[in-house]
Length: 434
Image 1 (cartoon, rainbow, N blue to C red):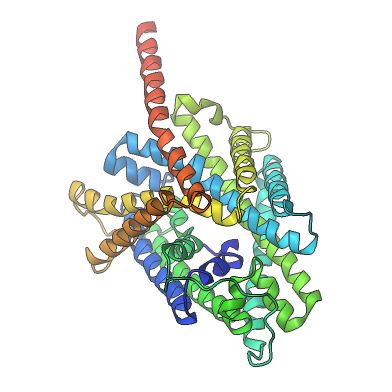
Image 2 (image 1 turned 90 degrees about the horizontal axis):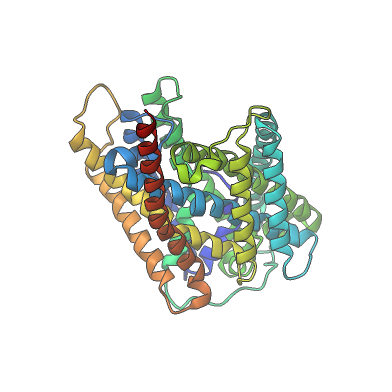
């Protein structure tokens, strides 16, 4: 959960709200909605533990067709879009240290995608060691930001960045989208349900303790941003963490913090590259149309085809987003429709599976059922509608990313038909040979 989005998204959220109170309230509400979703997923994961996680839940509740669309969306929109978006956060902070012109953030973003993908191609051990080191840098960055905010004297600390324009409304749907996507990642614990010792108890603790902890961290970090920069200063920056440290500790320490944030971004990209490539491998094993992804290279213990495919898509996304006003914002709204659609379908799956498979054993049961999953589903439905409305808005520049995301998602429908025909033809050929 605790990823690099918190070093960039608060600036975009601040530009979409009219007061500091609303700004902080959004982050609290985001944590509560995530907690409702985590409790819903905890029951699914404890009742149906499987390495396929969400793919497995959707397949049991709705069948193979919807499961295919989910796997397609995860491969082509959600994971790769997340890689490219966080790479742009890396690029924004790198461009602050060593500017390369207007396309500098995109160039740095492409470089980190290539570097992390290449490192993962060397093997699992290298990727694991890198992740451990980079996660430590992420923790140091968080502590530095919160400590800086608490140490600052807001009455005397200057705002180092000129503010943006006042929003015309109290709060926009775009602000909520960025808050909720910053909280994203808790659902990945569902993929561990089959591997955990004392699975029922452990998966619940993973969801609940993780979300409560991250919510407190995000509230502390955003309080620090507001205390030092103020809402207006936060609106006008693309590197709020560096501006906070510069205001409190000076330019030299701001440069050091920027390096730490870049390392933290690389940690997030590395984790997403690692898991995404393995999802692609599993998808390729199941679907003849994508069989080229289902190749595991034992020499390096990694799915090289999945890594290469994923990295190529991410680079295309970086290139496409480089022509927009804000590459990070464009890529987040690109992933948002698919992200919230499948969150909603997984929430509804709990109701479907409870009816289809009556309770057996001592699995976890979501508290305050059906209220808790209904709150989560209502939030997901609202977010999906907001994403679609944003995609269909007349503002071609701002809605382009969301429209592309919807288009790529819908492309999965004809691809699913082709894959099913290929599978049927292969099965018929096998029967004929017998």
